[in-house]
Image (cartoon, rainbow, N blue to C red; front, side, top):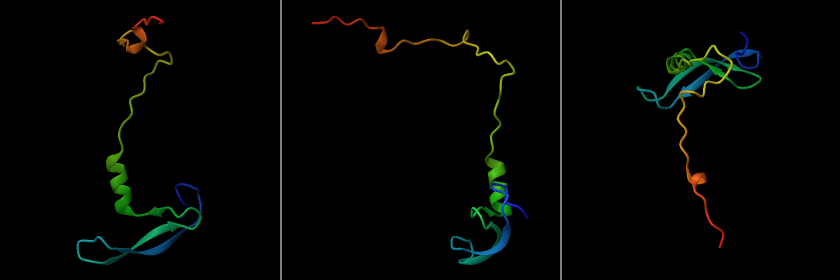
Length: 81
């Protein structure tokens, strides 16, 4: 199995879950020997659940017509003393 991040070699590794529901519990997952990335089915499910869809406009030109412009402190003219 190859790593999703660096394409390195993945090996099975044993991890100790200290925050498990049933006290300490050993879990077996895949770990990359190059970058240390851990692949676990539960971690992957949580990552997929948190992904958000990104909307991309088809036009390459920015559309500024609908944007309102609010001027801040740069709109004030100050007199020199």
